[in-house]
Amino acid sequence: MKIYLFSFILIIITIFFACEKPIISNGNTNATLTFSTDTINFDTIFTSIGSITKTLMVYNHNDFNVQTDIKLKGNSTQFYSRINIDGTSTNRNSVTNIEIPAKDSIFIFLEVTINPNSSNTPYILTDSLIFTIGTKKQSVNLVAWGQNAHFHTANTYADIINGSDTTRFYYHLIDCSTPWTNDKPHVIYGYAIVDPGQTLTINEGCNIHLHKNSGIIVGNPFSIESGGTIKVNGTLGNEVTFQGDRLDTWYNEIPGQWDKIWLIPGSFDNEINYAIIKNGNIGIHADTVFNNNPTVEINNTIIDNMSGIGILGQGANINVNNTLISRCGQYTVACNIGGIYNFTHCTFANYWDYSNRKTPSILLNNFYEGANGNIYVRDLQEVNFTNCIIQGSLSSEISFQENELGMFNYKFDHCIIKIDPNQNTNNTSYINSIINQEVKFNDPYENDFHLTQSSPAINTGKPNISTHPALNNDLEGNIREISSPDIGVYEYQN
Image (cartoon, rainbow, N blue to C red; front, side):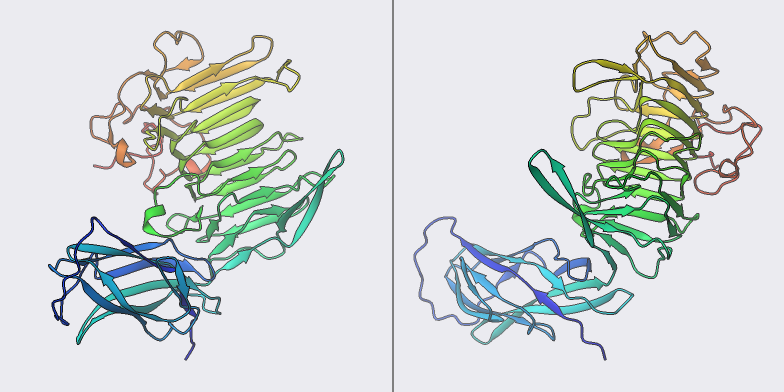
């Protein structure tokens, strides 16, 4: 039988007095305490990664002071258990004579760490905190789920020389000879890099968890060579997920937990199919490609809850089909510093409510300002939105940043868009598009972007637009009516 090392680290008990109370000597050795919960759950925790700190409040509702002994009980308490009482730490599993004043309470803070093991599947460990007053015992259950993972940590470094200063940058160089599989989650600490000439293949069902400030870089910025490719091969119902490495429930909706997937200049022919990318800073950052190949093609993907940008293109060549991008602190899509972009049957719905958003959902730009203050023009050769929805909580959700010295070509073809009413839409850049009408999502503030029965998006899309297999069905696999498709990622279902 396998023994899993399980440790409760940093149990801090701090006693707060609401006011000074006289100590009442009552001789009652069987007083009852009450607790803020009867079970403390730690959700799924990767081995060797500490959980979020949990809080237990212990109340003494009696009219007299109570002294209690507190003991951590279970098969795993022998491993690194310690208790900190009012700033004094001990490695013992129990403490005695903790006094709780009458009509007052104490806080107990708990954190769990599970040590590495060879298990590939989640397992559960249970212990308890026992409170003893005289002959009376009360308990609070402690339940933790643990899981092993593939850990991608720094295995090499590069020296960055700036004048007389040298900075050593540690990173994980990915071994691309073997595809990543879903036998265990993959956890990335820092940056994991795909070398030029290499292709990282991520198979269906993989769960990628990235630590704070971590990311994937495709192409090595420290190499004199260019190139590098990532292939994400998710399937419907077995998507590849990119998210943070904190799995406590509190982190489910917290953006900015990791950095980004960065396709650096020279990376090309990247493919992302059926992925869920959530809770980072930037979902996909695609830089300039050095040839005519697309930088990246994205199909049937959800990018959600990014603190910055969903897709950031910088002079890139990007094709996006059947993709939903929602809740971004800045832009859902930024077509920046020129490039070529094609979006088909996409929904860009920015109802970000984590903070005050000031930037619209879509940015189109064809220049940048250099460090010397000069303006440099980069042609926006084309941006095509076809059968797309662009909506959000701002009065206008599209920003045009045009330098007239360069190309600035864009087209909204059979789209529903929310735009500044002063913008001239009576031209060939707007083809059969619905301007500033409510889309009528089911519940946009609950991230439900399915269409209601009265939505103007139903049956108003451009017909027969492509033979691309990603467009035959909607994001959920429902057959798309090719001759009169609905606009956006979802076909309306009666």
